[in-house]
Amino acid sequence: MPEFITPRLRPFGTNIFTTMSRLAAQHDAVNLSQGFPDFDGPVFIKDAARDALYAHSNQYAPMPGVPALRRALAERFTRDTGLPCDADTMVTVTCGCTEALPATVLGLCEPGDEVIFFQPYFDIHKTSVILANCAPKVVTLRRPDASHPEFWFDEAELRGAFTPRTRAIVVNTPHNPTGKVFTRAELQQIADLCIRHNVTAITDEVYERLVYEPSRPHVSLASLPGMAERTVTLSSMGKTFSLTGWKIGWAIAPAPLTAAVRAAHQFMTFSIATPLQYAAAAAIEREQEALGPLRELLVNSRDLLNAALTRLGFRTEPAPSGYFILADYTPLLKAGEPADDTAFSRRLIERCRVAAIPASVFYHDAELGRPLLRFAFCKKADTIREAIRRLETISGA
Ligand SMILES: Cc1ncc(COP(=O)(O)O)c(C=O)c1O
Image (cartoon, rainbow, N blue to C red):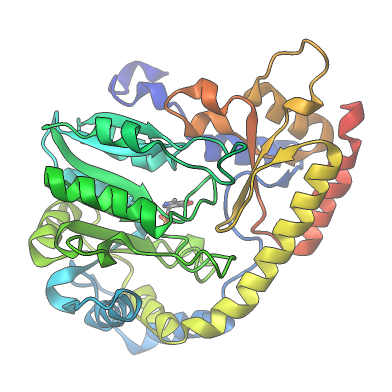
C-alpha cells in the first residue's frame, strides 16, 4: 500500500535485507543474504554489558554519548590516524553507522545540494542522500578486468562528478559489497578533489578491522594531508565485535562538522542505550583480543565458500575484506536464458534453500548488478559447509 509513502521513498520499497531474510525463513534456507554473524561477540563484552546494567544509570545518556565511550573512541582514533581528537567536541555516539549516515547528510546539506557516492553501495548511502532531498551523483566502481585485478574507478569520471553544487562525498572503505579496500593512491585522488572543490568527505569505515591482506591495510581518508578538517569519519562496533544487534556507532569529526552531525542526531535518536555504551568502551579497550580469532574464522569461511562457488561454476570476485563475496552466476545459466539476479536468487532459495542478495539492488544503474549475487561468509564454518552441501544440487536446479 504505497499511497501514503512519500514519492521520494516509494522507489525503495521494502529493504532487500528484510525481504530476503523473510524468504530465507519461509524456505528454511541457509541465510547468506543479510550480513550478520551466526555467532555472538566475545563473552567479556556481554559480561561488561550485564555489569553496566547495575553499575551505571539506565536513564538517557548524554546526547553526544557517555564520556567513557567518547574518550575510548577518541584515543582509538588518534592511535589509528595519528590525529588529535577531543572527546567532548569531536565524537558523537549514534545508533549504528545506520543513523550516523543520514544524521551527517541531514546536518550538513541543504535540499538540492549534490552528494557523490559510489555504486555499488550499501543502500543507506543512497537513501541518506534522498532523505535529505539532495541530488545523488553516482560514480561507478567497475568490475575487475584484465588490467584491473580489483574493483576500480575511473579518475576522470570521479573528477566529472564534482560540480559547484557538490556538498559532500560518501566513501565506504573497506567496501560493501565488493570487499574493495581503497588504496592510498585512490584516496589521494579523492582527497585532492575534495580540497580543490571544498567538499566534505563522509567515510563509512564499519569494516575497518576486517581486512585480510596485510599488503592492503585500511587507510582512513581523514589521515591524508588536508583532510582532517573536512572529513566526518563514521564507524560502529557491529562488525568489529560481531555485535550487529547492539547498533552502537559513531561519527568523529572536527568540532564545526560535529556540531552539524549533532544538530540532526539530537532530533533523530537523541541518545543511545546507556549501559551498552559502557560495555562498548570496555570492548574497545580490549579490541585486539576479539579480533584475532574473528579474522581467522572469517578468512576460513570466505575461503571455503569461495572455493565451492568457483567449483560449482560461479565466477567470484576477490574479497580482501569485510563479510561478502560477489559472484557472477551467469556461467550457470542455460543457453539463451537472460541474466536476472532476482530470479536467480529466488531459484537458489526455493530449489537449493540458500539465500543470497541479488546485486542489482546495490546499483543506481541496476543493470550493472544484474549478473551478480552477494553471498555473506560471516558465518561459522559448519553453516558455510551446509550451504555448500545444498548448493551442490544447483546443476539440477
Ligand atoms: C557499509 C556498511 N555501512 C553501514 C552499515 C550499518 O552499520 P550499523 O550496523 O553500525 O548500523 C553496514 C551494515 O551492514 C554496512 O555494510
